[in-house]
Length: 122
Image (cartoon, rainbow, N blue to C red; front, side, top):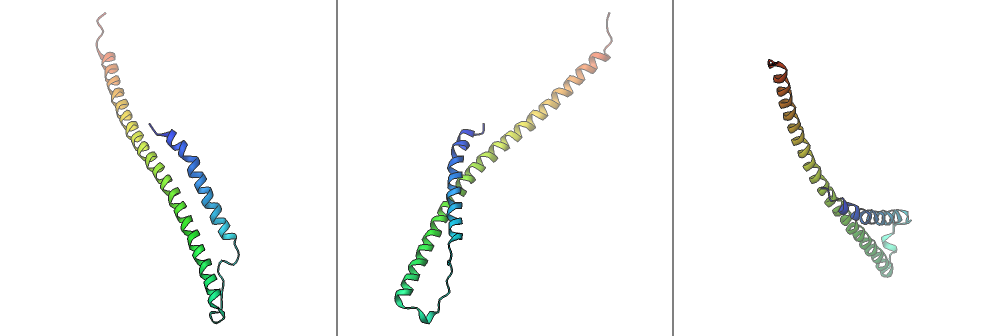
């Protein structure tokens, strides 16, 4: 049996994590001035330090988003693997049932044919 209870239980969690990731990425896209052009000669040490801190914050945000994306991908991959395994088992079962049905049909046709062709003793 497909572990539908596990899939259903994990679906809201995966969807919520994907939604949070999407919101974080879309917020990031909406922020103006993500890339700033600065004259290197005009930078003071304090301005360089501030710029470095902004860059480190941006890298930390991207790292957090990457981890969230990795968790969502891992959850979806696990569910996908379970579903594929179950679908493969069902495919094999259908193939077996098809072969069994064909064999039973052949036997039924042989029995019916022999019953019709056998001389009746009445």
